[in-house]
Amino acid sequence: MRLSSNIILVLTLLIYTHVSCQNKNKKSVEPYSLQNTEQRFLKSKSNDIDYKLYISLPESYNDSTLQKYPVLYLLDADYSFAIAKNIIDHLAQRNHLQEIIIVGIAYAGENKYRINRTRDYTPTNSEEPGVSFQEIQNKYSGGGLKFSKFIEDELISYIDSEYRTTDFRVLTGHSYGGLFSSWTLLTKPNLFNGYIVVSPSLWYDDKLMFSIEDKFSENDQKTKAYFTVGDREVNNQWNMPEDIKQFVEKLRSKKLDNLDIKFEIGENETHNSIFPSALSNGLRFIFDGT
Image (cartoon, rainbow, N blue to C red):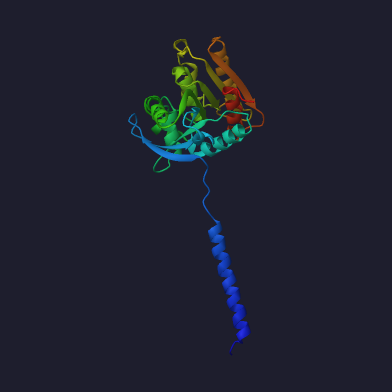
């Protein structure tokens, strides 16, 4: 059976239209990237780990060659960097917060998220039973001292040499990152001007943080620390709201003029939901935002 010329024309137009729409849709799909961000890589001399650095620069960074900015050092950047950047940009654009450089510390190469953070954020090796990731903790924990040395001796000087920074620095971490932030506050309080400590794992190593001798007497700079935890962070293994409450009470009992603490419990917040609101509230406290 032979097709008429009209049928052939219609089929040709339909095929052309279908192909054109496909090509048009392909052209309209492009990867999305966060504005004013870049990646850098830094191999640590302290622990021989390759770090991937996510950097976010303020919108006004390229408007001047003179203006300098404070720096937020962000742990768990593999998940927290995009959250932090959007929160900071949103608040800064509306004059609720000053502009800030963000340095997110992530990992190059194969992403072994639990292993990397367990190694870097824990100051001691601990073989506590009962935790869901016990095998990883037993094998890899205890690299906090080398990670701290990397931040103090390598990372901060690198960032200061590459970007226009002030000497005002803030550290923020969640869970194990909150443990590391608490430990840094106690042992190297002058390394950062501000600490945002979110749901810290104060249960770690038989509540190690409660027995560490702090070095606040060696610190003469003004330090601000924001502590927070969700009211739903309670289970059969630990009571995180009670732990952090006792930890803050211990710090406040020292009545230190150079340590300004704010503590809040997030209503209806879980361990997995609290970070965005915690970061927003913590930043506005540290930087006197509105």
